[in-house]
Image 1 (cartoon, rainbow, N blue to C red):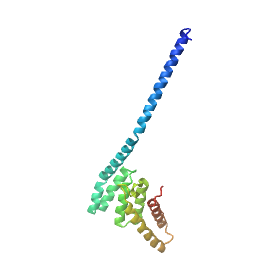
Image 2 (spheres, one colour):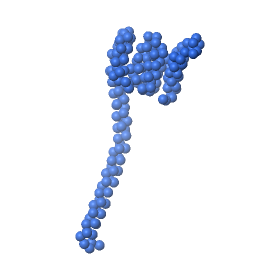
Image 3 (cartoon, rainbow, N blue to C red):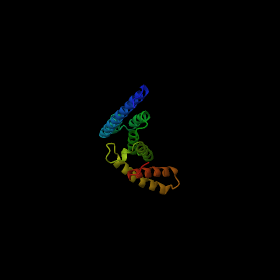
Image 4 (cartoon, rainbow, N blue to C red):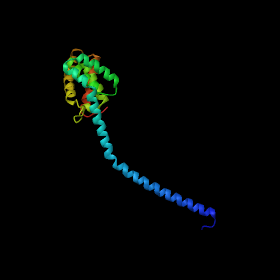
Length: 180
């Protein structure tokens, strides 16, 4: 069996390969246990990131909320335009813009803003979310359907009304649990 130096080297190499394979398999199963135990850690990280995001949104849009409460809707809209340009992927600015426009009587523009905000972040129609604006959106949809029906009876060929109806229907489907 161990006749010459070459045979001895082959047996030593084979032993090293077997030991290395055993160490590798043992290390891999140990890492698998760590991955399984990090599952709750990942959920906790996601929850913390979400809460941090909600707090950041509240901080960023606090000046707009203050201007709105003071009745300075025009100034609030200007500040919102600046924030929307700065954070284009954030839907909160569009939701606030929709609320302000609705209070000013610009219904179609308000609907467009709400739709844009919901498209960017579906949490605004989720009743359990801290960002939820579900009640406001439901009121907008119910009032919007009445408003558009009345306006369409006067002018049935108006394309702007058709676009507004389509947006209202989009919000209605999202409230019902539909997705993009």
